[in-house]
Picture (tube, rainbow, N blue to C red):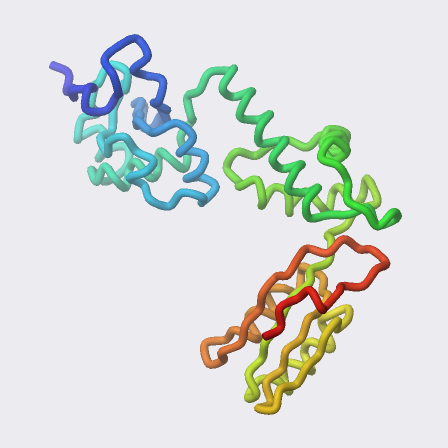
Amino acid sequence: MLNCINMSKIFTPTNQMRHTNVAVVRMKKAGKRFEIACYKNKVLNWRSKIERDIDEVLQTHHIFTNVSKGELAKKEDLLNAFATDNQTEICKVILEKGELQISEKERKLYYESSFKEIANIIAGMCVDIKSKRPYSQVMIETALHEIHFSVRPRKSSKQQALDIIPRLKQHMPIDRAKMVLRVECPAELAKAAKEKLNEWVDSFELERWEENGDLLAIVIVEPSYFRQIDSLVRSPTARGVVDVITVRQIVEEKIDITEVETD
């Protein structure tokens, strides 16, 4: 007799639409089929590290051979296939490596929306290095099509945007916009930090030394230096602060530092 579970504990309303919020992830291993029941949209969030709470992804920690029929996998089959009967750990394996069962229409909508989101992220962080102005999202979408970019569902949209920019740079005059950072360094760190900032930043829009030796600076810098500056100023032993004021368009005019809070 098949092991079964009451699916009313998993699926919402007992009507014809009760499966609308269920996403099934399937894996074939050791000659057996294994499935898990997840919440829609959460599987991809888990794979892209946006969602880290597995209870927000799984509708149940049970492993099935058939989710829609409520047929549970046998313990011996789990042990044979995964070398463990810890169902939560098996769920994680299936989440990472299994095949998400979605309709062709759902798949198409997901890829289209993700494609647009990636283009929007790129448009927001990059500029035309010739005109010094941002590209529109439509122009970025066109360029992505021209270089035959494909969405990778196991990566976040932001990461895909960052990954594809180098390829876009080979295709069009585009680069990351520069960042404007407000940097506060405590006296014990200020001198050494200033030397490093001199190496890393494009320019200082403001450099102010306080009576107690603290340094306040507003700098323009390539985005690739942000982590280094942040690590330097906000080390475990320092009390420095790094704030992003804006992602700067590469334009001729200077920042109006009177509009920046420096108190």
